[in-house]
Length: 225
Image 1: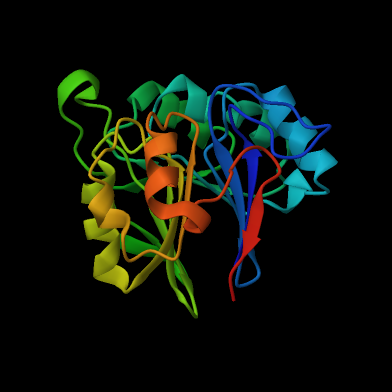
Image 2 (image 1 turned 135 degrees about the vertical axis):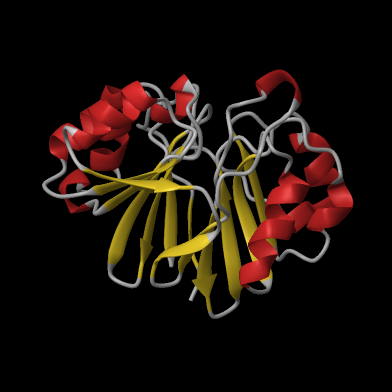
C-alpha cells in the first residue's frame, strides 16, 4: 500500500498548494482510491499532477463525511475521471447523492464492510455534540504489517474509530485529521501516527510518541508492504 497526502492545511514538499481540508491518494492491490477531496478542486488537481498522480486512474472515491472541506473538490475530480465509484455514508443529503449519481456510480455505506479487496470501511459512525448528524466513515487498509487507518476529521472520536477498525485485524498506523482527540493512550500500540488537517493537539501527540509521529502535509507519503 502506498499513501500520499494530496490536500492538507500544510505543505510537506515545496511547490505544492495548501488549503483547508484533507485528501489522500491510496494505491493498493492495483486499485487507486481517493479518500476525501479537500475544498478547492483546482488546488487538489494541481497537487496531484505535481506529484505525478493521474486523476484519470482513480477508480474509487471515498468521502468520509459531508463537510465542505472534504467534499468540495469532488466535482473537479469527477470531471477528470473516466470511470469511478463514489462511496459515501448513507446519511449524505439526498440532493448531493442525486448529483453524484449523475456523474458516477454511487455506493451508500451504513455498516462496516470490505468495499474492495483489502480495504474496509468502518461504516458510518454516529457523531454527537456540535457536529451531531454529520456521520463519518473511515478506512482500514490491509498491509502485511497490519491495518492502516485513514480518517477525515474523526468527529465520532478517534478512539471509537480505532476500536471499530480493529474488528478487521491488528492496527499498524493512522493518518488524517484527529480533531480534538486527547485520549492519547489508545495510540500506544501503533507503529506510526500522522495527525493532519484539523488535529488540535499535534504537539502533545508528538511529545508523547516522538519518532512514531509523521509530519503530514501535502506531498507526505508512506509505503507499507
